[in-house]
Image 1 (cartoon, rainbow, N blue to C red):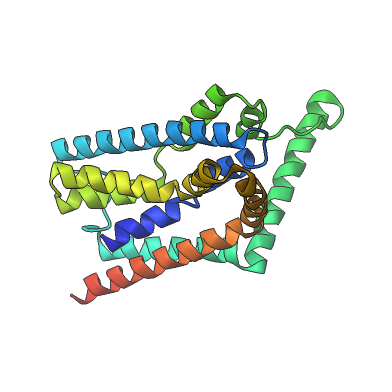
Image 2 (cartoon, helix red, strand yellow):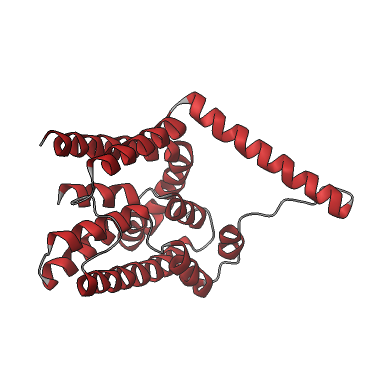
Length: 239
């Protein structure tokens, strides 16, 4: 259970979800856009989660569960998690990410020069372009696409399937997982409902904070995930 809740907390800061919420909070009519994004994401995420659990129940398998995987897999997952924590949490790691982004940008510019004879103006990611239109319907669609099950969610679903909870318990766990995962959307929505004027100022500060600290938060949860996987792998090896 604790592992599932840890996955849920980590999923709250998954890059796609984090980027979507961050973009919406800087746009006009953020409350309406955020509500549409939240509804679209919740419907797809919960729906697909329940479908995957049903599939797992029919064939007894859902990917690789951290509850019954091998010690080698757990230790390997821990190494990956620690590498992610280093990349997103250390100065050298973030410098490596910036260097990779710079090289990637240079390759794109070289291709543009070869194709067009000059560097074309860089386009924002499609999600930013979609949300920039300020359409509630497009925000709904973006929420559905950006919130397809990610790795932490799949690990959690695998654990739920392996634990053989009752149908009611499994549904409750999936819903609770998603409520935790969408906390960054739920907190501003509650604020807009209770106190729209005050919330707007707080949201602006919160958006700046997310932009400045998003990678550090991902690093913390990656490290926690790595410690949890490493501990389980060692326990399985010893006994």
